[in-house]
Length: 422
Image 1: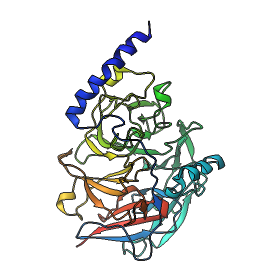
Image 2 (image 1 turned 180 degrees about the vertical axis):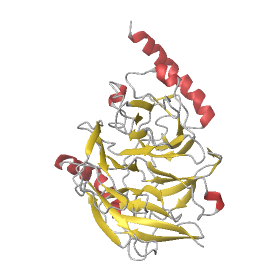
Image 3 (image 1 turned 60 degrees about the vertical axis):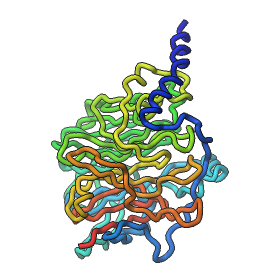
Image 4 (image 1 turned 45 degrees about the vertical axis):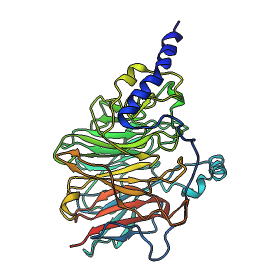
């Protein structure tokens, strides 16, 4: 008898899918075949670099890093860079070679450290690069507040006493909170951000894998954004159903949190769109039971129509399989007025699409804290003229105090700087 409601519901799903399809223009699942199409990273030759719009200059900010994933600007203007990589054992590395994924990734051992970049000459480029903190476990998010440096390892939130301007962390620090990091830990990054009064910390935690065992026994502390006090206590789920939220930022002039979310794969070329969305306290965004609102995922063996019914439609689609990760709102004045208050999103690039998608940084215009248009290409040139080849893969976006922008390129161990003409 317990099976009857599910059978009835699944019988009605095609009608529900078609109804919403007419509203948002998404194709049906498997409208095209799901394909594995890994790009081949060929690097940057001398003189090659990404391309920004007219009126901007692109330059190499830092080189010789070790999988620079995320960058954070300290109060005195130093740049901390989290250097970490997906951890693959010998079996997983062999699998990556067989599937073709190895050519799209950097398979080096994870550096598990944070480096510091400092500009002592005032020319806008760092002349000092040193190891700031090591012995970590896939560090990603960083945050300085209340006299502490917070670091989000894949499996824990850590806190270290911090003095402005220090060049190396000598303290052992303390673990405030364990974070979920199962043996299968596909989405390992843990980003962190605080609110305006530094009373809370928000932690972005991705799902275990693509579908979380088809919806069975979903870990409530994954595919979500957690909220905790600065001491790691009073944890609660701020928002859920977010397959892999990575970039987080507050829309300028508002109290609204936004996130860049990397959506699911293997439903065809044009499903499911990654997205940029406002994050509502207590909101549910679909994963794994539905996508982009109330589209039920046909692969789920344990459907939850009660959750699908309340799934929130994201604000801005960013293209399917683009691996949209980094997010930064532009709050400075150096860029032209059209960019001020808008959002930049770094797209690491696809592996599950017949034609490559992503591999660029896009700009989403905002006004009064709300998006006003579709994503626009901003930093391109990561794809080569040869089909299937890319120079690099952007991950993080960070705005410097002088108004220039940094973009990390993890597979090439580089950080690019984009500066507006004066």
